[in-house]
Image (cartoon, rainbow, N blue to C red; front, side, top):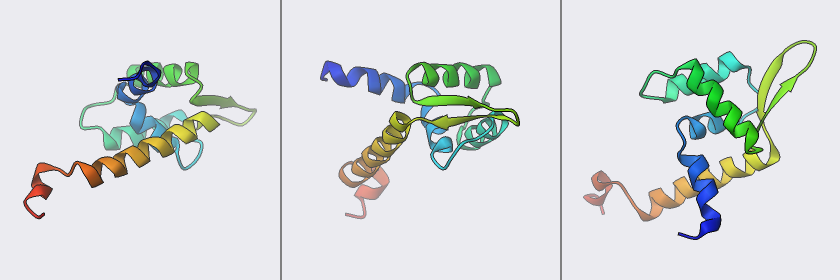
Length: 108
């Protein structure tokens, strides 16, 4: 694997990363909305500590920003985060097209 892909693959495989990025794809969310969205997509219980750590990691990677104003605080994707969400969606599409599930193979 090319070394320049390693950082992005490490980000993408980190627990909750994809669920958080997907939840924020449609716009900013407050912390509780992120927790709810991620909890709905995860087969495991999502602990707030894990969510907080993952959000902080995504902020440090420049993919998510924590926006504060007088009224409220929310999390939102940066431009790089939006581009990564689009890239991951395209990879998902490619994978479905070129590596079908075993269940799908019988229908070919």
